[in-house]
Image (cartoon, rainbow, N blue to C red; front, side, top):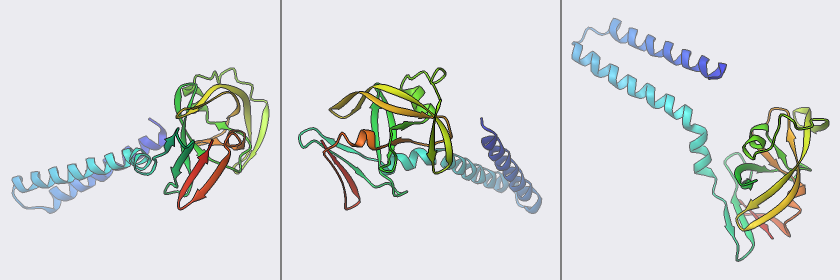
Amino acid sequence: MTPDQIARLVFLCLLGAVILFWMFRGSRQSLNRILQQIVVWALLFVGVVAGFGLWKDIERSATFRQNVSSQTGEITSPRALDGHYYLTLEVNGEPVRFVVDTGASDMVLTRQDAETAGIDIENAPFYRRAQTANGVVRVAPVTIETVAIGPFIDRNISASINDGEMETSLLGMTYLHRFQKIEISGGEMILTR
């Protein structure tokens, strides 16, 4: 567990203890009634903890549905709640979620996504520097064997691994130039091959 997760767990345990103390101290009702209240509060507590823990998964599955049509050569993706467009590509056969970033020159992988795709980041040469919104970060140039989205497969794609903190990999212009047309209309992004 990370320190933030431990702190949240301690806070929730303390909150639960305070609620239990308040129920026993303030209630002069029967033991049966107190036990019913404890069960209700425990279920609420578990529900809140589960909701916080699963929120990113719920949000991701509720807002992200890309569609690939091999007949028309189109890939469509709806705008997410945060205003960005996301695509999931298979990088070396592994699914990696990207935020589409026309302001990024390169395809940039997070360290975790690079590891997922089987790239050896321990021996990656982090000798380049890149200017980002969060400042200057070290990046390692890599060549990805295969990048696929639906039936569209590209080989030997140049990319970078970001050594800094980054939540989602970026799908920049070096990959987006492989499409004939990029269109944003009616809350959807349409890429055409």
